[in-house]
Image (cartoon, rainbow, N blue to C red; front, side, top):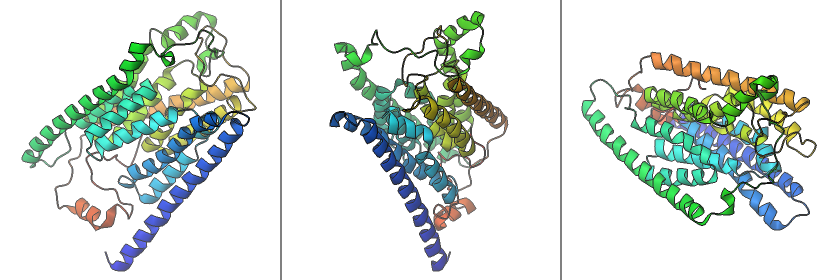
Length: 401
């Protein structure tokens, strides 16, 4: 590559990077303005309590760009990061409600990035433990990321010595990650459990949503037991359906770990008969790392639902209230929008499970030998030119969830 080509490539990369940064900063500024309007008349502490949500969305967009730069063309990485920053779902969650669920998703994304791409298992375990303290549901991703690290790397047939060294390195990373995660969880949860902090208690007067959003209103009265089962005793089965396919996927394709985590966060929402508006935030960020097209469709459908039900002009369902399976669900336009969002979730989930089944049958392709064409391309500025690097944790560019 000549000096002129290197200059134009670097200029193109820097312009796209500035585009992502400016888009993320602009959307964050709008969210902070909306937050200031939402808490107008309250104390400054209310505004400070909502600031981390907007900052987390900004950091998530930049981190999505960083993750995808080494896996897809740089203009696709920039476009995906801009879509994350401008997602209407995140706008309602952090701008209107100041919800900290986005902080937990950011910490989860950072932990996976540190573990898979940066080989920093100790720091990844600590950050994931912090994310679990914010939102315990992120711990569903622990078996998936550990399976991705434990999976044998795709090596050329003649690289037996490298395979043995890689096996010991993976075992060491798993031990360090597990110990750091256990220590962080103990430090975060033991004081709360020992001293019976009020944050762990459910208020008796907590608002109950009218059955939440979702397909529950399609079921007749005799099926109320099914709704209660899926939201109660059958919840472990739903969580198992979320984790097991993702673990099998990354065992076969460790490069798809980000998409597999997205599938894990998507499945409980798609299989639940009812959910609160807040739950719609879960699949957004990792969904864009799996399949930006379906993530954009979902973001549009879920964003319309949240804009109608969870902003100043809507109140069909409490934002984070507890679900009441026996109560009548939200009706009217909120029910229609919730059903449309659920249909998008089901189609997305079916595509994800189909991808898992197809890639489980397809033989894995060995990584190119050191010094081969792929490494030469990456060494010649392939990353900034928008060409995917060969890396152990890379996502395969086609497909997705």
